[in-house]
Length: 123
Image 1 (cartoon, rainbow, N blue to C red):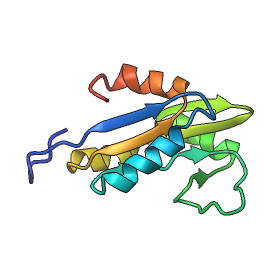
Image 2 (tube, helix red, strand yellow; image 1 turned 90 degrees about the horizontal axis):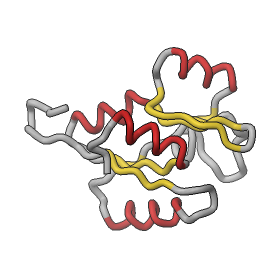
Image 3 (spheres, rainbow, N blue to C red; image 1 turned 45 degrees about the vertical axis):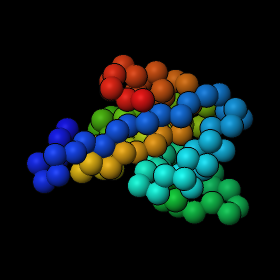
């Protein structure tokens, strides 16, 4: 998806691993170093925890809203983990890539496999 204004396409970068494997630590370090890299905020059905901010840490949605997002093809990937659902909103990610901005995803292994199938050029 090339942006005609700048002839540059962003890159989709995935950091993946099991829960508790240190993905967030790596992501935060990379984001601190690479200021031109953007982070993708995931949607989740789990409850908001103390200190988390809507739209910064996650988009907190109901299971019904999440299912609607799946039905409307609004997610790049999605997975269930310990009874909650997590997914990457499609439009925000693809808009940034199209505009030449690289974006970093912090996702579980299931989601990474979906990204790999759909976007073989992802890193």
